[in-house]
Image (cartoon, rainbow, N blue to C red; front, side, top):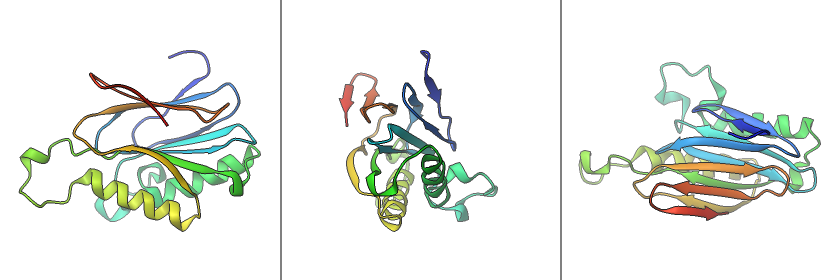
Length: 162
């Protein structure tokens, strides 16, 4: 990690401003939700673990689920000067890491996470402007708060920019 990098662990969400890079590592079936306000140079990243609190024995962690993480990201971003009308979203992850171990036709957790994230974004009227999702491989994501640039990297697959 470099100076200004903010590490976002599984089931966490964090907000950064100018000079910050929000980083999450090891996205498999999890989904990174990246929100950005270009005018305020404020970004937020949530590492979503599960599509719904109903799937967790412990649902007290709001960073785990899109229904709770996204409104909290919006609230913290507003506290740093972000305007909800300027915020856009991009997402990454939602892979089917173990599809070959499941019965044919099983809905994978990655796909369930993607549906729940898209539903939560729509509920909050946040436009989804880019994605790097699916597949059967893990990803690392960096969101640069200054300009909203996003790097999605995967082993043996290089870097994609959103």
